[in-house]
Length: 437
Image (cartoon, rainbow, N blue to C red; front, top):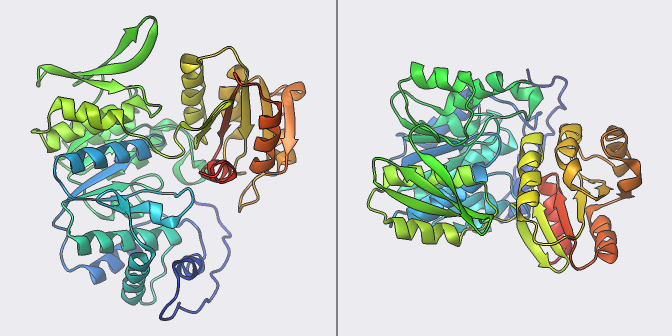
């Protein structure tokens, strides 16, 4: 059940003519008493006022605990390469709100977002919308105006009651199911899986990207007669070795009689594979060689992103134990030196910081625990208290901010060391700002 006793909304005047995007975003934060208010009724009412009919475009919905952004980015680029026009909606953003809404691969302009916000505001009347719900409807407005062929939509939280789920998908991808957002989704994979499976619809094609789906997901697949693709069942991911290293994977689907090489680019391989399985259903004429080329060039800010070469600085938005375990495995497999691993970790108070640190601790030689001066952000001292007994105190230094932690870490690092900055989108954004990215 969502947390109770949320603050009451402020009565902020509607931005007038000529208002900036920042003024509108401030307004969006004020018009609903809760940051999160799961449910589709209010969003559906406003949607019907905005559009008389359902979108003519193909709706492709991507949910899951981790790996959603990578699946969206891969599928978006593959669709564009196939000659389709696309609208892609993701959240949250790293540094500019415009990152959330892309048309044909480019972030939309401030003026376009403001115009869409004005349309949503005119349509909602006295219906309250959260910041995310308002932004979701605005993205729909922009995609409809642009007349794009495909809407690639990332679920914000959960699935069943998320605003994105107000539209029926033609194809759905669930990237993974693990523990996160416990206050809203539950504290075990079966309950969370049921919420994630809420994006499924009767008879559609769907892909479960990971290897271990909860029974609750498979029950929904069966009940709704969904045509499900999943690794180890309808397709195979086979590691391809080169002198003892694993540079990538071969994706094999018997129905096609070929294999597609997926490069090890630092993005979750199961998410990339799901995007390939999807594009082969959606655009069967796209050549395997073209798919391989698109994926070999694919990068995503904040996802195992290299910001500096020497000493190497990598940032990752991973913020739950499942993501941290992936990150730790990635570091072990891809370290190219004998240097130390120096972690800079900053997190939000409602995250399982104990689980995250536990997943990373075995690969980290030195910890910098940093404060986050944002809503729900943990101070460095609070983070250290929560990690007592998990991270050895002799390996820990505290810093008031990510910027200060990065400055200290760089001063003390040797060229062969690896500095990994992780824990939230806020953490990564601060590191990217500090290094001029």
